[in-house]
Length: 134
Image (cartoon, rainbow, N blue to C red; front, side):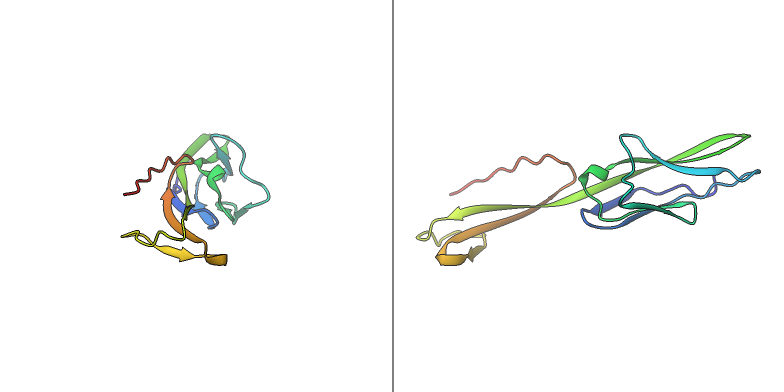
């Protein structure tokens, strides 16, 4: 193993690249695998025989990726973790007559309807928000 792939953290929609270089004689045949599923063929490409690039990543791409090299002398493997963070948006209706929401943002939508816009990021697929109104 000359260069093992490094762990990657990305936001959904980004492009990621994992690089792996394996040496040996005869030159090893390199392949990319995934521990829990298939690498998405429509969004993934292997460049220069060693760099796996996945376009438009999404939470389903979060996994352990394996770079494997094989030749008659044996097999070597290296792993990298890919984390995909999602932007999650919550909308809560604020009655028109309620204007006193300290520390919050009030955005007025069409026809005078008010909406409170919460943003948060999650590194997991499940998020259980807690809201308190005082």
